[in-house]
Amino acid sequence: MKQRIRRILQLLLALLLVFSATPLTPAFAQDADIVDTAVAAGDFNTLVTAVQLAGLVEALKGEGPFTVFAPTDEAFAKLPPDVLQAALDDPEGLLTQVLLYHVVAGKVMSSDLSDGLEVATLQGESVKFTLSDGAAMVNDANIIAADIEASNGVIHVIDTVILPPSIVAAAAAAEEAAEPVATPAPAEELADIVDTAVAAGSFNTLVAAVQAAGLVDALRGPGPFTVFAPTDDAFAKLPAGTIDALLADPTGDLTQILLYHVVPGKVMSTDLSDGLEATTLQGGAVVFTLADGAARVNDANIIAADIEASNGVIHVIDSVILPPAAEGEPAVEATPTPAEEPPALLPVTGGESGGGLSALLAAGLILLAVAGFAFVWRRRLA
Image (cartoon, rainbow, N blue to C red):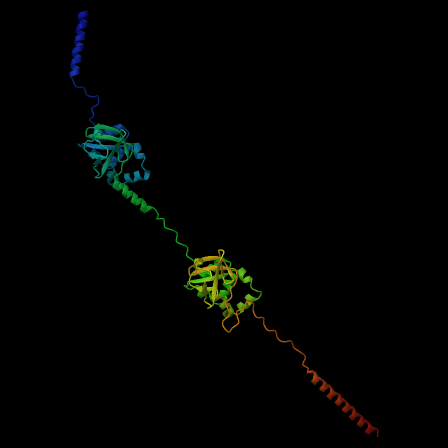
């Protein structure tokens, strides 16, 4: 019995020695090419579909060797849907360029990588590797599984689809061109002095006066003009009947007064100085007074300044200013000269001395008539 057990042990030992001298092979030899390896993994369905659409299956089944950076299905899912669809719609163009950018000629194992290493792809542009803290990246994609060997190369799994720089630049340019260019809103065109005054709504009397005097076209001219514009309240300060009297003679005093409110050129409030004199279109001068932060032209307060128009500027004043009198002529008065009343009709009578003589003549005639009557009466009685 002991001898039989000894023989069995010797046989087992011999078998062990035989097996130890024979090289062991894995149960499944890695004889699948890169395409079949990707198909079998089950995590590269989008990649496999893209390779088939681009007609690259036979190329990636070739002898190689190739190094493939294989984006997972989740990596493709990160792409904007319109970008992925655009690539799939252009299989021989954009899609092929992107896929070939994921393939490097030769077998590059993870141990061959170094920080900053650049390697040309089959697309023609290079990828760049970054090694940091035990992790490896190709461009902006993390290598999440490395050195998956196939019969004709090696696969490194990445979590992001990498794009050739030329395609990224072209896409950015196209997007910029497609975006509506933000153009500044056109500056609102300024109205001329007349239209500005009309739109303000506070110069109805002034506008009516300008129209009556026939100065509208002049104040719409190229100018520039500086207008001291009395408000409706300023005109209302004039004595009753003044405005009506002026409007009744539009080419006379009204025109003179209006032209006295206009200075040629564009005079902004910053151009004024205390005591400054400016000649108006009427010919007379106005004088400016600056005190305590306030400005006056003649005796009118400037209550709003620098209202710009297309052909000049408006300063709003609270009183109507009147031109000085020309030499040898009376000044233009703020109140109209009252119309002369016709003299009262007097009874047509003579003077005091003429009145007495008439009475005396009348008495004489009466006495003469009485005497004649008496004389005739006596002769009849005789």
